[in-house]
Image 1 (tube, rainbow, N blue to C red):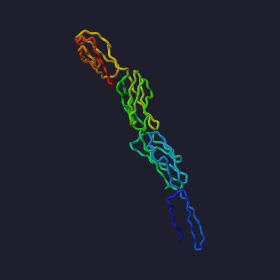
Image 2: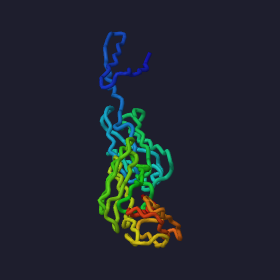
Image 3: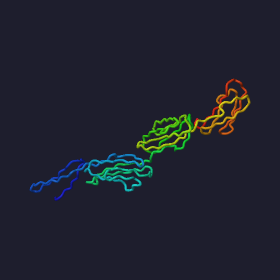
Image 4: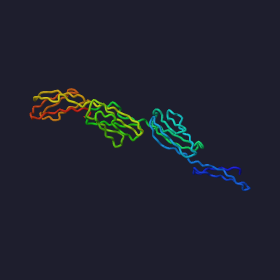
Length: 276
């Protein structure tokens, strides 16, 4: 036999020796360096648009070539020498997974693959433009969309003195404006990559009622008008010992008729806007 087939074992990073003897018992050796399996790190990662990730290789001969699919618009680019990867410039489609492949220069069949899930950049919902009343008794929920969790919520510009309460799942927050109106608060969500999105909330002055005090005889009428706040308005007679009644004229105006009971206690008219 003038030749033999050799198959390396499963253990890498070692050296095998192939020995041959002739009929005269003369011996010769061949040395086979068995390379270890190439590995890549990290093996799985999620990134947003415009993000970068450094991939590193180990094992094998120590010299590597990195690569991925050829369509840079869809999958981004990876430096073939350093393994530095950059995601696409814009989001293409849901569920895209990009393979990052590293090969041993000494053996192209000794390779490893990592996967990159491309997700859209973080957004906040509802979009900027919400209006609320100063001193509101109700809250507005803002939710994080896209990006990579965990999320952090904050009021990046708190002009009204508002407050937030983050939900248990960390994906949304309830915002309540403070008592200062005529200002704009900014609600921010920041994802795990440091990317953020903001929603502006215009905090208008709290609802008012005019006049604030009137004196009437039984059966006489007065008109009350709501201002500031955010419509729709609701007028209520919260205490009416005189037996008075309300009759709404317009969405912002109500007519009050004084009753005939004389108790010495005032009737009280309250106006509530959209945000309580």
